Image 1 (cartoon, rainbow, N blue to C red):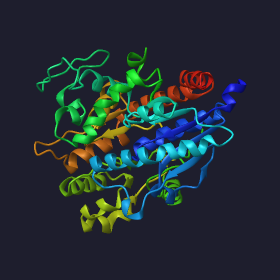
Image 2 (image 1 turned 90 degrees about the horizontal axis):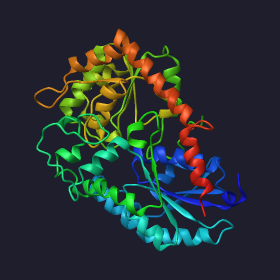
Image 3 (image 1 turned 90 degrees about the vertical axis):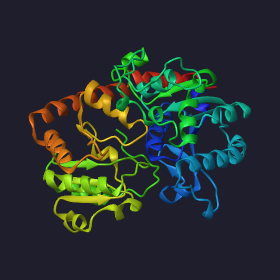
Image 4 (image 1 turned 120 degrees about the vertical axis):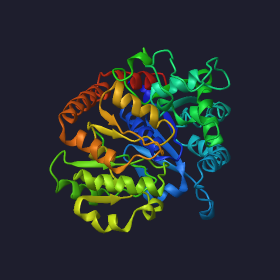
Length: 403
């Protein structure tokens, strides 16, 4: 590695959502392994309860806030709170780190923190936008941006460049519901400004997975939750390989009581072992009868070490909101690594449909085909990040061009 790359210091800014934190932390570790002398990840103080001051290859810098200023539960309010907190403190952090042997030269930020590129340039830093969503999602948001689009969406199927035909239910919820979380919706579409303003763009994908759109460290090291690692792994190790269903609806989605009851009953009816990630605030929606029988087939935790649990496995998709409907479309129809549950007329997926879909993936011939496809994509992803792979080369090119 050239000497100039060894003097670089990258500052990394994720937004406080677990699905956004995980990929950007892994990317940070890749930067450090490629010769960036120092990588510092900036996050909020409330996450520090689960974090050491240093996490392997990366350093952690916490933005302080009062205990009574913990992140709001409402997504829109949380994003506004985070924006104000970072805007007030980022300059101080950069100035402090500038007094070190390796002053900060570049800010890698979550693409949804669109205000970060202006902050970076004001501080004389280069700015790199990191898109945690797929390129397919980015293409949809670009072509259907309400501020610039010429596409009239009337609820019928949508045909967009480089994408398969998309039905209304395949589109992100922010396309179908213009009143859903207005602040978050605004940030989703404002990501497009990064195409013109950011110095670099990174997408959480690899060439073979989304070639039309693009022309073994297992620890995330940063979590909004305390992972039940030992409990999870001990329980999983006592089960036969490939016999457990992993259930999760990400850190923001919330199911109503009826859907939680149907899901719980469907899991039990499937007669498969299951590991279910449920936030503490959601557990009270579960029926007492289910909780009393839980230990027979399942384990419930608030989080788990994902990279140890479900790499290269088929899926049952039950999208709730945001980009999940589009991800489900690609999983079932494009990448063919899973099945999509059928939603009832009342908007609820019933227990029989859930149990049927689980058994189809876990025990039927179709499940074996889906597993083969999942393993194929897993191998291609590994090739992309291995030395000399497409993603590996992209990171090396970025590092070699750092100031």
